[in-house]
Length: 206
Image (tube, rainbow, N blue to C red; front, side, top):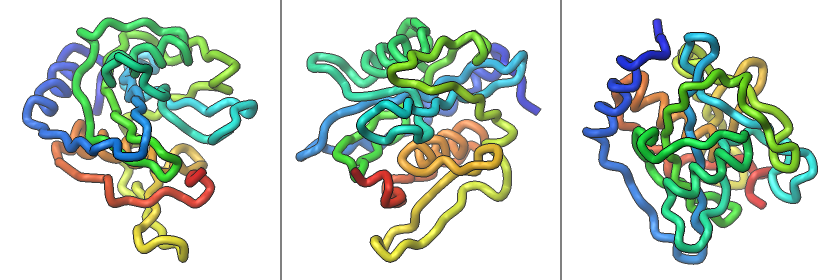
C-alpha cells in the first residue's frame, strides 16, 4: 500500500502546502520541538519512535519522538534537527523538512512543535544515544492507519479524553500519540484533524 519513494515524499509535501498549522503562545511554558521522522524499514515507510532512557529524570521509559527543549536563538526546525542528531545520531539538512504540524501544549510545561522530516535511512541504522534513548522502534504507515486507533479514554482528573495510539501490543499516549495521530490524519488520510484538546495520562503531567 505504501512505498518509501520520491512519490511519497512529494505527496507529503503537497499535503503540507494546503495545511495551516495552529501555533500556541508560550505564556508560562517552555518551547520544545519533536521530529516526526519518516524513514525506511527496507522499502516500507515508517516513523521512528524512541523509548526514553530509564535514567532520565522526567518521562523515563516512555514512548517519544526524538526531541527536546529549543535552545536560545534556535527555531523549532533547528531544534528538531539538532535533537535528531543528539538522540539517534542522524544529521539532516533543513531541505529534508517536509512540514510542521500543530503545536501541542503539555501538562509538564512545554509547547511542542512537531517537525516532519524525510530521512532516506533504514531505522535499524539509527544509533541511539544511551543517555537519552533506550531503543528505537518503527511505527509503520500500515499500523498508523489501523481502524482501532486512536483509543480515547475518560479519566476522573479531567473533562478531556486521553488519547493514545495502538503500537504493536502497547499504547503511545499524548502528547506523542496526539502528534502521531495528527500526522496520520493529514499524511495518510488527507484530513485536517486538530489534537490540542486531547488530554494526556496523569503519569505524563509531571
